Amino acid sequence: MQILKKLVNKHTLSLASNAVMPIVGMVTVSLLARNFPDKEEFGYWILFLISFTLANFFRSGFQQTSLVKFYSGATKEKARNVVGSTWVVGLILTAIFVFFSFITYIFYQGTPSTELIIKMFGIIYLCTLPSSVALWVLQAEERFDRMFILQLIGQGSFFISIVTLILTHKINFQMVLYAYCWSAMTTSLISIFLGWAKISSIVHKSNACIKELLNFGKYSVGTSISSYLLRASDTYIIKFMFVDPSLVGIYYLPQRLMEVIEIPLRSFIATALPAMSAAMQRNDPLQMTYIMKKYAGILTVLLVPVSIVAFITADIVIGLIGGRQFIASDAANVFRIFMCFAVLLPVDRFFGISLDILNKPHLNMIKVMLMLVVNIAGDFLGIYLFHNLYGVAISSIFTFLAGIIYGYWVLKKNLKFKIRDIFYLGIVETKLLVISIFSRTGQKIN
Image (tube, rainbow, N blue to C red):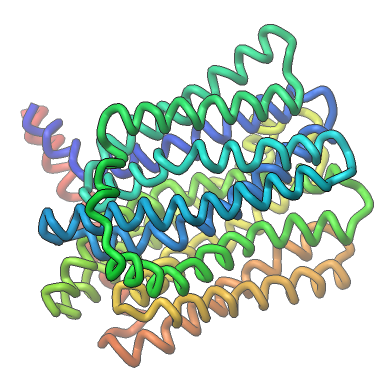
């Protein structure tokens, strides 16, 4: 029982919370890839997800990091002020997207599937606002147990809907979109009912706090959108450069499998962000630097064996997720290329959030926009040289190298560390972690 209490902590709960969406999401994508009537409908679903997620990144980019930054360690009065102001900003941003979705729907004349996407876009965007605010607040409060429950409700309800549609032979793009909307609405209503969304905090808003959030958010939103476009740009360029629309789905599967890497990465960031923010509020840059090096180092060390195993078993994994129709495609080799730069992700991501915590979100935005430029240029060059999806995948290696080099250059002007310190501390802390786990196991056996 004592060992269980030690194992169930904010780190493991954060890991479980961040594992819900990608794991259930990958299973759901696998079901859709196998059961959609044709690949064209699967392609429309992917384009909807990319477009909707981009809009969601715009909203979360404006608000998530700023809420956690100003909420963590704040007084109860300040915390209510931050949440209430966040709600106001969120409602304004949501209203803008809903308005443009409505206007576009009135005047659009095109394919029925695209018309359906435009019609449902604003409705779904509004439905996801309460649950999004709830997740941001829960992260700031380090209530990863509640985050786990809320994400489980969201992904679980959508998964159950998809299984039901498959069993009743009603699976098509329209019904899947309706199921997604129903899941978003259910999750948000539950977050409001349980009080996790803190919607009543709106009365504690203030113009000064709204202005503070917007000043920070105008840079972090650029970072979030540019970060998402690093992946979305690949899809749009593939759609533009290649005649075969099925290549979008072939490239998307390895991208989705990268969520395996994102699980521990998001988990570590979720727990590190409040701690790093609190350290800077105490004016302790040395502690903030230590946290950054520790988390980035451990993740890098742990990802090495994971990447090797994923590289070797790529064909098996792609076959399990996508089915027989993707086994003979380029998906497995694209996934192998992704695994070659997976170990770069922790350092790049922690360099970015360190810039945010140092109240230099504009530098983080520049870093990600630089990566986006390198990625787009690399995609076109890669397609020109290789004439296939491999060129697009290989360009990502240079994209993340550019981000790390720039991030290290600007951080060195504000923090005292060397990049080799990250790998050294990562090895040391990983050894201590392994020793700690085995010693606890030994005590339990004895």
